[in-house]
Figure 1 (cartoon, rainbow, N blue to C red):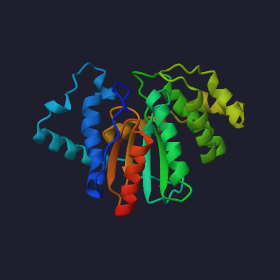
Figure 2: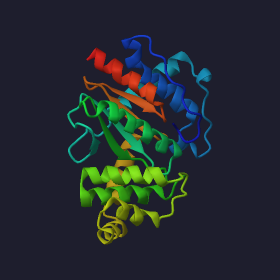
Figure 3: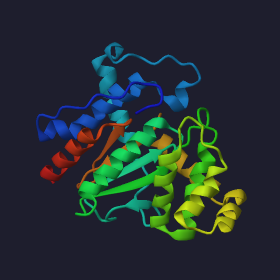
Figure 4: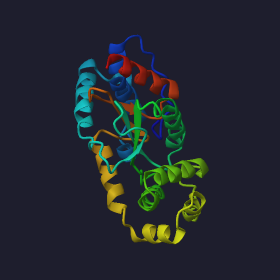
Length: 255
């Protein structure tokens, strides 16, 4: 869910066509209502969905669909949980200090528990630190990359799981905890600290953030649902497990 809004209500899907169209409604109702955290901090008012004329909403939906095509294709250098060749991919752009990202992280772990082992869904993690709200998040994102560089994809996810588990969110994680997490998951702390202090992965994190914005991301968590036919739908905010499950089931049925 976006940082400045209430949790989106669970969408109700009556048929496959409605299921595949629902994420655009999430963009309009979530993105416009929520107020664009990334850009909205400048004080620009956010329109109510009831104030959006049908023609304007249609244009917004079309623009949102075009923006999703800016998503960097999923590749072997991505952090992927589940089968990289899964027919459905959920690409999440996340901020480690966002409390709703913390919640959605658990939702996505539940998704992978149910659909990952069977190879139906893959979870792709990318960085979207909101510097205005969480100045610590960018360095924490680099810490994730340093862990992955030392121990591989599984180590990246172990570090991510532990960080999201212990953070109180909203920039309250003590930076001293970062090497402690490295020790907890069993990687070389000295090498980890050297990597983190060097800023080796600062550009990688910045590139992820830039791509998140280019795809239409304005708050966190910002996720893109890639259907079996390659069609992309936005998942705006910390949608509950049942809502994500419903999208998955309808996409699998229609494939």
